[in-house]
Length: 540
Image (cartoon, rainbow, N blue to C red; front, top):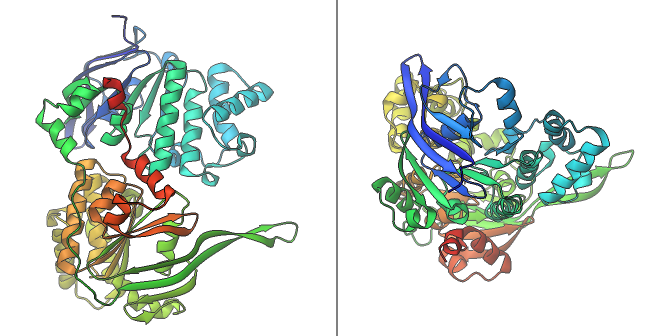
């Protein structure tokens, strides 16, 4: 057999902390061959990203070190290689696509400048030659209207468009190996399918090796030729994708496969007065132009949506990025100006002044997608959960406040000993539980859950779904659940609203929508999320 493109052998990675040395990777070995896709799979903290980032020496030295191991690329040793060699490989012969392009792309630079930089550094291309190559790359990754997008900044692009720009940057210098670290986690299902198909097409066209890091087994099924399963810094199983996924030999691999969120929400009580009933909700953003900046048209982000949720019931809101899901939720919470009628707990709050609406805020809470962004890094867990109590119950004694915080943490499965910790000292699942405790401590009647599981491992997702079900049953909470992950939506929702371009294209009972969708767009979403995996094709 020919020499592997990338050969990682007996890799060890140690992090040096104030508490001592922490072994993050212990004796890991794996290979990637030309044109092959190897998927590194495991939960957060398993060492998969640390292993991949070691290839390009991207770990924070000297806090991280490699006590032992070898990383050979085309037979050339990269471990301990001099800076010029690493820099020539990084972004040149090896391209990298990261999980969240919004944090990987420079917010102050245009698309043209960001791709042009890597062309200049590795290929010496500048001026018109660079511009021609940039347009070729943007066309290659199927970015719509590439000429117009040259002057766009990252915030002016959708999530899928930003990821296409990242892929264009990674491909700029014709790499032999592409490292893709959770490249589709933050994307909705149809865009995710498009990006995966694009990566697979480009890989086949250029015969690149692909090192895919992912916790999403749906993505792995679709993409991988071989799988390497990691846990606690070691490889517990590896082999052909078809064999590992269908006949896993290790108990941990079986646990990962079975950890997909499943089941159905607890039966909701019949009838009951709606917690929230909204009709004809519209959110239109003006488009201004001309010398006097007159309004020329409107972006109809939400255009006449009606929604109702009763105690103990979950309404799942699904759709692609830009469909209006989050804008609708913010409008319903009166965090975004809108037109229409919103009745909350029997009171029309559509035109209620913000000062008078404040008393109702305890009954309506929201949990955001990324707890690392929504939790203050400078506040302890106790301070984060206490913040709402200090605002809405200023006369509460310190003892009562601490007891309420402890109760809220216990409700979400966290020990009181975590009160003094800060967000960076917690896992992703723990951070999201803190965000949920912050909402629960005020004893709300309605919680808006905006993509609360998308950044979590599948096993942690399953735990959080079970927790949300249990909390709903115990407190008869009403949920508005926004997600692009239809597996999680199906496990939590009683009713579904499918949104596209600001309108509801299909709605009704969850079993009806999932089992017998009426609209082609709904069927497209379901196919993108639950469609046929690549493994079946590989094994045939």
